[in-house]
Length: 158
Length: 160
Image (cartoon, rainbow over all chains, first blue to last red; front, side, top):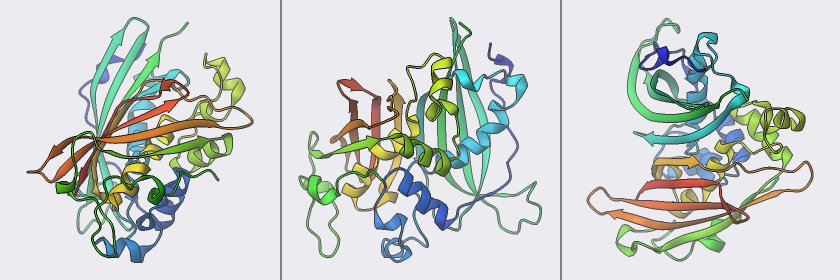
């Protein structure tokens, strides 16, 4: 069973994720996002942004990387072969654009067990890395960029 | 590569003309207006491509024997691939991907993707709510595979 002791846990700020233009293009191609602002910097600047705009679900890359701190921890007892995605939500305080350096604070908001099924809800608060960072292991926190909430359902053993 | 229909073909119902770029205007919209439809097709190469682009390498999305071994009917599409593909209807309609300030959904049913051929998901969107003060509209999305709704309460808030 999933370890309910993790409910309420907050993790330290993680190492920065660098948002690359080619990663935005690659992700946009993978989800069939053909809007020019994902592919052409001139189109993105025409809309008033400093670089390519990430598609609305791009933040899942940043969030799932942060969630690994929790879901890959053996003590959390999450069997990923028995996980299905329950829900996902992205709230953007500002768009993610190419060139961003993003750091994430991961929260384990809720762990519920109903019969053989457990659900775990995580929340990733994504920020621009702060100015003047010299140590990537302990970066500062800048502007709030996005909040990503995710619920996983973990099926119990048969 | 499978892609959706160009927005221009399907998203004309609520688009206002305003010079070089055509973007919908809040004042021209009403609750219940349809923003368009599109058809998304998923095949196995598409799932592998999404796995690589997103970093989600869960074997249930590309390994038939593994998927069956954990009790699934077969390989299923990433929920996030469906979610990420469905929103293109909205971003193309809005004319600015960054206009989507809030997007959430529940994943109600998986989309099984056959080893050969494709799984087809039909997408529709309509205006569910207008907040004139905030300058936003909520677009309610449906995504169906055959007769099955694969997303529940898929909603995007768009700043116009």
